[in-house]
Structure formats: structure tokens, C-alpha cells
Length: 298
Image (cartoon, rainbow, N blue to C red; front, side, top):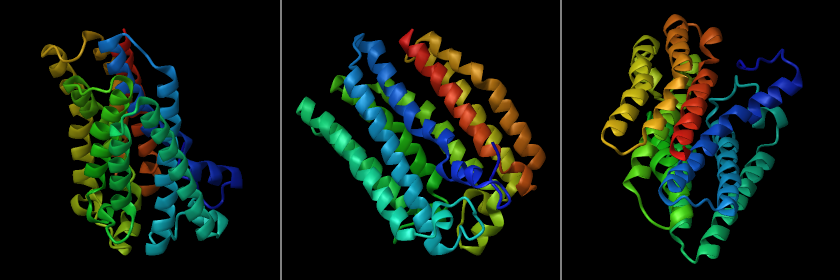
């Protein structure tokens, strides 16, 4: 999958705008939090898992949709033909569609809290939504200051994984917190990779993304360290006895990690060629987290 261009058929533009592969960002933290809970309790509440999963997807949809709205206000998406705002020409419609997704998602989390007579998971989710807003929404727009990756790490790592774990157990766990680090790093990696091809647009809009600050060459070198950190960290937690040895199955995602680093190293300065690197990063995230969770289940 590559970045959609204006000459692409309309369906390709819409698929690029909706970004189906990106929803693994919401699915995997819930999967990991639930897998850790199952490993420790040998109990799986399918209704809670399913409800939380749908809610997380809806909340991520809100973040993606509202991101298009807020970026339209700054003009950074003027050349992004697969922006939902640019496709529809109706910013208020997209804004309220995003809000509908947010409300629906929060209602799902609220339902879990009511079932369990415990507001904790709802509170954690609200905090995560707050981080999602200050990343992109006015007057904060912290993503424009280069803080998006840090916010992404905490929102989709410690907060979402911990919330998913708590929804199953109503307790806290250092193992789930450690697992959230392994989830948060490849999640931030996706956002980091999304900047390589849009440096000119980011600079024009005043967005100081990490790639704008570092330059694409240094960014490509840093990418190796970020990507590579996932695997020794997992091994370290296994050696400490925090993770079961089966979580080393996540190393099966290494071919995608090598492919990502090599691709960006070769093409970091070529926007048209490097624009698809975030989708390779999605594969690193998906397969590493999938097998990581399988390790806990086993």
C-alpha cells in the first residue's frame, strides 16, 4: 500500500483516507492487555474484550478523523488529496462524524465500568482521549512541537494496555506495564515513519516533527535504534522472568523490521519512495504484537 495520489481512482483515495491497516494500533494494545490478564488468571471475559476492542477502534477513528479536521485548519494537508476534509469538502460534517465516534467509543467503555461497578477503566480511557486531543487539537497541538511520538507511546502503550488489562482483572500488574512498553515503542514507530515523506509540508505549516528537527538522514539512523530496541527489551524481560519465554515469538517479526530499516535508509530523502514506510512499520507493529500476545496466551 502506498500513498494515494490525485490521479488514483476515488476508491483508492478513500481507502487511503480511512487507513484500515492503521487500526491495528487500537486492536493490539487491547489484545496484549487481555492476553497478559489471561496468562495470569486463566479467565477471559469475551464480552468485555469485544466491547473494549470496538470502543478502542471507534476512539482511534475519532483521533484519525479529527486529525484531518485540525490539520485542515493549519493548511498542512493542502497537498494531501486523501484527507477526509479534502475528499468531502465538508469540514463540519467530518468534525461531527469524529465526535460521534468518540462518544460511541466512550459509551462502550462506560458500559464496561457500569457492568463492573468500577469507574477506573473509564478514567484511564478519558486520560488517553485527553492525550489524543492535546496531540492534535487547538490550542495545544503538541504534535506540531515534535511531541507526538511521546504522546503516542503513553496513550497506546501504558494507558491502553493497562486499561485493557484492568478491564479483565480489576487489578494492577507490573507485567502488563512492562508489556505496554513493548507495545508503545512500535506504535510510536508508525507515527515517526509518517514524517519522512512530508518534511516540506511540515516546515511550511510550522510543524517541528522529529524528522524536521533531525533531518531525514539522522532520522533514518535513529529509526534503526527505535526498531531494534523492541527485541532485546523483550529478551531482557524474559530473562528477568517478567515475560514467558513464548513471548520471544515476537522475534518472528524481525524480517519486517529489517525491511523497514533498509527501506528508509535507502530512500529517506526520496518522498515518493519513502512514503510507504509507515505501512511497513504497521506490519512490524502488527506481527510483533500479535506473536507477543500469543506468547502470553501459550
